[in-house]
Length: 287
Ligand code: PLP
Image 1 (tube, protein in one colour):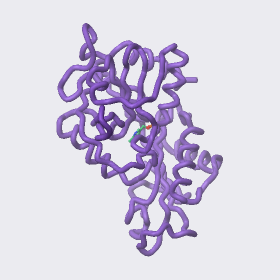
Image 2 (cartoon, protein in one colour):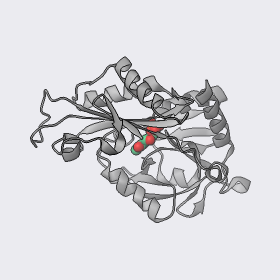
Image 3 (tube, protein in one colour):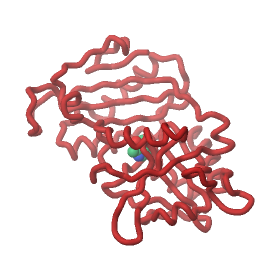
C-alpha cells in the first residue's frame, strides 16, 4: 500500500512523522474517511466541506484547497489497483515543542492512505448485525471529526468483546433519557411508524456525510425523515434500527443487547425501510 505524507507518495510502511507532531502528543488533528466506487470519490464535496469546517473549528490553517485535495486524492487512488477503495486523510496542527496552546504558524502535517474497500459481508446484508448498548462517556464536541478517538475506541471494544458489530451509545441527560447519540463509528437511526428518525446533530454526534444523503434518499423514496431526540425507550421499541457510515453504507441492526429488533413477522429481520434505503444507496453510488 502507498500513502501520501506531506505531498510525497511512498510505501505506507516507510512513512515517518516526528514524535513531536501534535497529532502524536495531543491528538490535535482531524480526519476524513471517504468511499471510492469505480475510482470515483463518492460525495467528495461534502467530505471536503466537513473537513474545512473541522479545520476551522480547531483553527488549523487549511493546508490545501478543494482542487489541491482532489489532485492528491486522485493520485493516491490511481496508485492502487482496486476499483473500490476507502481513502483516509488526516491533518494535524504540526510539529512543535509540547505546549497546550494552539501555537500559530505551524505547518500542518498532511497524511493520506487508501485501502481496498471491504464490502459488507453478504451474511450481514441479509440478516443484519447485532449491536450492544453502552453509556456514552465521550466529550461534548462529538461534532468535530477529531483524531482523538479514545472514547470511540473504548466504546467499540464493548461490542467487540460481546461478539457484536457495533456499540450503540446512550447518553445520560434530562428526564426521559438516556438518549441515543450514535454508534462508536457510525450514525444510528430508528424507524418508527414508517419514518426514519435520527438524533439531533449536536455536540454529541458526528454528522456523517450519510446524514444528508439519507435525507435525500428518504425524500426520493417518500419516507418521512426527522432528526429529534431519541430515548433509550424509543430505540428498544423501534420497528427497525439502522447504522450508516462510509464503510457500512446503510446496515440493518437486528439484535440489540441480545434482543431481536422489531415486531411481528419482521422481529429480528432487516425491515422494509432498510431494504428501500439500501437499494436507493446502491443506485446513488452509481450515478
Ligand atoms: N459517527 C462517528 C463517530 C463516526 O466515526 C462516523 C464515521 O464513519 C460516522 C458517525 C459516520 O460518518 P460518515 O457517514 O461520514 O462515514
